[in-house]
View (cartoon, one colour):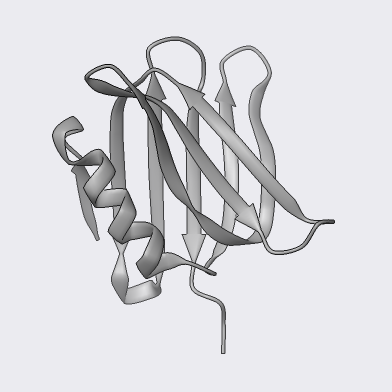
Length: 116
């Protein structure tokens, strides 16, 4: 397993490629709220991608999309990201992205390859 932090200067380029490579993987999105505990936003939906709204000189909002139908479709936004970390277990077909914002709870995006 590889654990690493993605440098801010590489976020947009990294997630453009990441989104293409992992499109359709099974996604679970969780928000780690310190008061209420982990809150699952989506589970078992097809990963659509991670994109950025950029205003000024740095990415200011991250959008995570999952789902492939009108009944099962989730878009989750994280404002003012500070750190983005990745745990990549290629051997088991699993990736976890942690997005830590300037304020508020962190978001975890767990991806798994669909079983054949």
